[in-house]
Length: 446
Image (cartoon, rainbow, N blue to C red; front, side, top):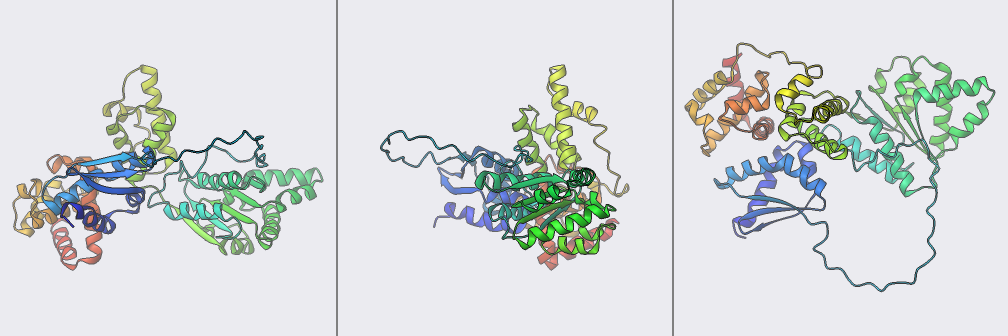
């Protein structure tokens, strides 16, 4: 096999060892990769996968190829959408009476939530995949399931996506989505109106029960008692139960032990704040959905500085898009900083006495190099390693953003900086010499 044809195999091996799960997800959607006239072409089944993979991985792939070949290889990301496959001519059948689809019985679901518009990352891929398996096999896999995590991380999105998927593929199934607060209020009203029996009938005769925010049930003993019996009835009849909570079930102080035990007997998965790449993918997707026109640099600024949850990220996007529409002018970085000053809080400096230049100098001294070697473009393996370590330590020991570190390293972009950080993180797990170097340089700085 020619060297050109073997590039992707080598690149993929290195990516598997260094990429966070966020970016691995987009690579898994590559339909095929081939070399055409010296250009590496990546083919995807849809524009969505193509755009997000290119945004998340292009610069990293280019950097790794540079390390392997010592020269830049052009990359191309294209959509095939099955259009290349020849279509067979079909005989036109006589028109048949159109069969009406079964009407959905599930009116509590919000149809805007789906697996297709949920963007999984290393913070959420486990929960995302578990939710899809549950939706495909309700009552048989991961029953019950508890999804927990902070505000705005996607719990409700996944819960409703499960319901919508089942409703679409099994419309005869009875599904109820309800918040714990509404469940409680409905139960209280049923007791007041002497309709407890109809309440029990409603909730104990479903195929899928989705309850959001069960932490609301704390200190509500009678509602907990009702849910306990409802849970047992559904579980014994192999009906699917999925719950969400803002924390692990063990941290709920005013939920009865027997209810906690039932919640814990199935799968418990957590959602964490998304990494930068996931935030960027989500921001791009939200802009497409809502037809926002925001510059990529502005999106990068937002995603670098808002790392709490998706709700805050969406709020920032809406604020800037609304400003742009109202004043009829594009949003610049300066405008973004001004308009988002209430969203973004400047991080505390990790160590006021450490600068990026100090880190570069100490790293250069350790490797017997000059400062300009690390800031330069040399592809010498020893210099590349020193450059990666300098960037990793700048990220770890200072509060500078990825873009600021990139500027200090002779104008490298944030994706290149992220690649260096990920590369050293992975090497620290397997390479004693890298661990020794990082530890020795760090000791001279702190």
